[in-house]
Length: 113
Length: 110
Image (cartoon, rainbow over all chains, first blue to last red; front, top):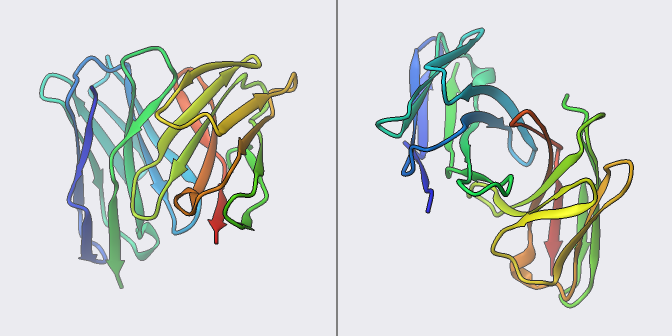
């Protein structure tokens, strides 16, 4: 059974810092991994999708890496800004072809001015 | 903005009542999934519809049911509401493995 874990659960950093969010999964046979951002009480915004054949994806100040063999992904945020404050979730498809995404609990990030 | 729209945005219901939540998927996406997100938790998969047929279901009781229409919009129905059904309900449409989520419906059961 696939399980996804995100560490830390919460993170507070001063503006301008570079930071890394971690995501681990127990079954390495994944098709892809997706990182999302969620503002309080809102829906999920897709940030990056990494296919199983890829090692990393970049979008602006965000870089996500994927290491299937070790069951890990990281989301790197460069030069953090207060507007980056949100909850970040990672998700992988379930192993059966159900279309189900399995999410971690999320990391809540606060960037202080 | 993803193009996935959900209605209503907020809803308050009494225990035992029934509720219908609606989702309009992104244009061209024929797959719609529903998730329940309790406060402080990651979203939990309820079920998915593909071309009007249920195509996978999570660990939710039968009082959670759904429909998908020919235009690929979808409904989530919950009967006999319980206090623990209070949550953010998210709809997502997908294409080539990438999921696009709506803004969610906040359901409060009192």
